[in-house]
Image (tube, rainbow over the protein chains, first blue to last red):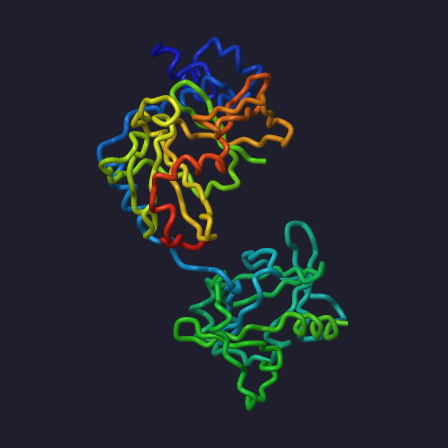
Length: 221
Length: 157
């Protein structure tokens, strides 16, 4: 019995002993073998540890954690000195900063060039130029260089890559927390701002993705 | 549809997963005097008092073994007055859920007065797995007065 019990460690994939298990030819890997499955099940047939019932009793009487019903997932990121957010559904991925290949005879500031994302060439655009954000101090920038990332966004089949200074990640915002954009703000960036919400001690501007990508398309044509 | 497989002693049983809210580990239950022997007790499930039935005791007359794989299946029910309640069903070796097509469910045309919930079978490789009808099962617990009146059920996440 003892010998049968750990055959996967002797003649199976976790062992080196010869001759190899004859079943391996058939099942390829021990995890597909019913002997292995059965051994796992047998672990669950042990008697209950003494404290088990009490511990789980404590776990189960707690109410389930934070309610996420009705919240809106956004990705928050920083461009220059400004914290911005975009709806999480349009994001494909976040990648490390890669080098940007500039395009000749294209002198538009918004269009930074093209980048290689998993072997595919994608257009890299500058959000700060589109929105009109001021450049941050050089000193401050240096210390934050480590967090440089690129966001890969897929809007209705068009892929865009934005270099950003920092990405916080996905954040669930309840619609009640959205505040209206002050009408007196006349900076150009406010035109892309749909809502503003407070996150920690910062005000984050949620960008209107429809408007943003519409003007993005126009500005690089 | 998804069905949950479990054992009572050496016999495999199954139930539909539609009404199953959660499969919880075994916890310490508050026993109640003067209740049927298959009533295992009560426990606090996220702020709600949930009664637990020992299915093996009810069907085979022996209590479930206290093993790691013995678990409490929490089932969502609705009372006659449309308020929800939760019932816990204790069973052994609750380790697997499998997909079964609708035509795997067969009824042998038997109806037992004592256990109307045990009518059907699910076919699996020519073997028959006895199927527990959760709708009919709740009728067997009319002795539980708490199933009549309202205590609230926490919202689903």
